Length: 381
Image 1 (spheres, rainbow, N blue to C red):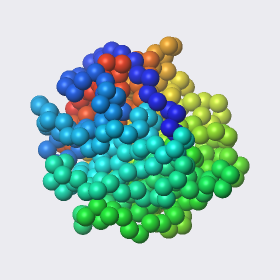
Image 2 (cartoon, helix red, strand yellow):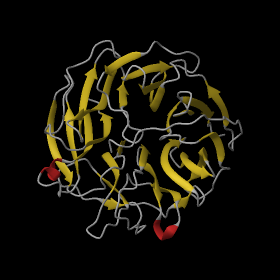
Image 3 (cartoon, helix red, strand yellow):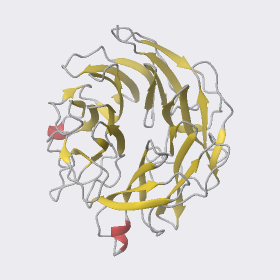
């Protein structure tokens, strides 16, 4: 995980419509040319974007209301790890902001740090670590704020490899209290893919995680499970992708009530594609996967549900010769596909992230000249 450092390239934005009424427009990012690894969340008045600054070695975030940016807030600096796949992130609920990042331990290890602000980032709780501090890998955190001021935290945990490095990577979860402490740690799954992102969302049935599982036969397909002790996991689809190494390509999940959508990358049967599946019962069952991309996909997916939750906007990275492209496409649960559109191009784009607020989407990705952004108006008529 720690060795996956971003090597970004200059992005060339193109503007094109996505049916039925989607307009794409670039957004200037005013925080310098040494920024990378963006993460985007929506709040009640727009978007919050976090990023890593390579010059100051700092983890920062700022608010964008659709017209102007706030001043940048520094969350942490000095020892923050720069990793294109295991990036820092924030979660926002009202004035509460929860942040996660990683710092190095010894020569090969990495530890997770979590902090909470109750005043929009003006002050922060003392950082806490949800796992034993040891020279092992921990990361790929998901954060889900809850209505009572707490938050559910989940992460990939390497503590089992402490004995001669032979143990499996685990998926664990805990609760962050309103004061920033951690409680109720549980083992969710004792064997998961080592370095694929996790994703967590609130459904009508409660919190639900999507992650890449790992069977004894090295089948690494996408499953969903509640972040509970020894949770029963449900395959989103039985791709049957057998791979002995981690593909560094986790799923993304979103929900509106009982409507749930999951996007993921697979290279089963030798075809590198992005699929989307929908559930209308809170993630208990999923429909057949819908192919969003072509056969040159690199994955690095994200998605948000639109309107009433029966369609989604999906983004991914597609290879195109020496360049790669940030792609976007509307996918409906009925199988209707919008036209795929290019948001940007470059040599390496990191992991593009998106969020939706009032049916407007903000997309962000790493570029050679700093973070690049674009908005998409996705109101469905």
